[in-house]
Figure 1 (cartoon, rainbow, N blue to C red):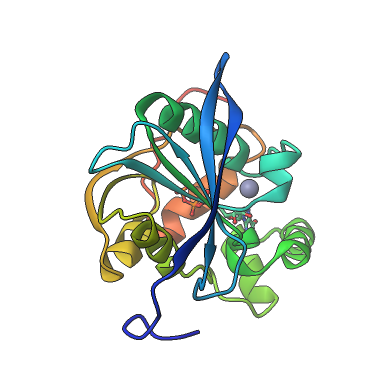
Figure 2 (cartoon, rainbow, N blue to C red; figure 1 turned 30 degrees about the horizontal axis):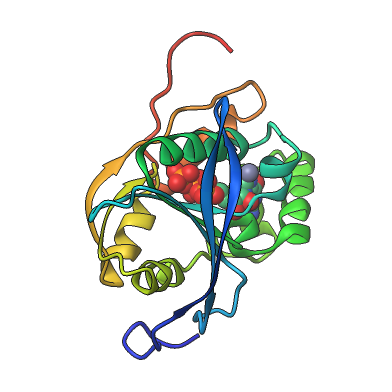
Length: 210
Ligand SMILES: Nc1nc2c(ncn2[C@@H]2O[C@H](COP(=O)(O)OP(=O)(O)OP(=O)(O)O)[C@@H](O)[C@H]2O)c(=O)[nH]1
Ligand SMILES: [Zn+2]
């Protein structure tokens, strides 16, 4: 991967409008693809009008098990639904980043699930058990996508401080961080607590039993 200073500008490749189901209605969304992204991934931007000069933006890392199949082991599916609704209402951009398993890929993530179950490890310890780093995601590609869309300042929808830090290092001004909801279940409670302990996510836990 090229360094932050030397990567070339990405360009918009194709824009198409599709109707997207958001809440109880359909909203037109533009699906945008790119050329010359630094990691050669097929990342996609989904934009909803109106786009203000400081749009609401979500960087969502791919999670096939949660986003598509509704797995309750994580909070990705409900976070994605919430993001689409909020951005469809307010206008803004969802960057759907093909960073499955915090960057290690789908099969490796499922291997870490097996290790979590067999050795009673949390999500980060299981990565290390299989010789992966805690989190291999590089968000410079998201900065490139925003710059290709002409966006320099954003309101960022996340609980993950690393997304803000990496975007700012790559030249995107984060004027405000908007927290996502807390989508806690009996199945993902340990996963959410590990995110707070290991990567400093700001997640508020209600005290009631689940
Ligand atoms: N390696 C690994 N990856 C996981 C596990 N559970 C979920 N993931 C991945 O974690 C990522 C979560 O992505 P996001 O929801 O965008 O990021 P986040 O760090 O939780 O930050 P915010 O949701 O923005 O607060 C996805 O790529 C999932 O596939 C796990 O147990 N192991
Ligand atoms: Zn997930």
